[in-house]
Image (cartoon, rainbow, N blue to C red; front, side):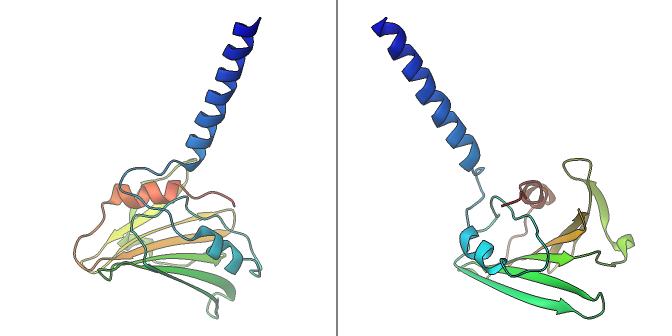
Length: 162
């Protein structure tokens, strides 16, 4: 009987540890960020949006900004992260549809059969998509090395409700 209790206890501990690890796992080459700070800054928004589980840069500085897009008549929220090397990673959350000419973008598949639009310029890379009435846009401006399209897609696919 004692042996059976030890086996059950061990299995329960293992399941707990596996569950915790699955929730907080950040893939190699990606980083955590001050998500709590961002969530607090988002509390007064007129809309709710998802946030990424991780980002592709080691952010030294994180700045948030709530603003209004007059041309779209919509509220928006900006999260900008800076590295020591002056790489800039921006996440924009827009309440509504962002009207952009999609002919300059490559259409790509994201999770849950969402379509994303990717653009690689010499000075920046952009990926945007729409989900449940919110436009998500991530922009990377490197000081030297660009990210791959796959890296931006991986960040986009990590967006979850808080």
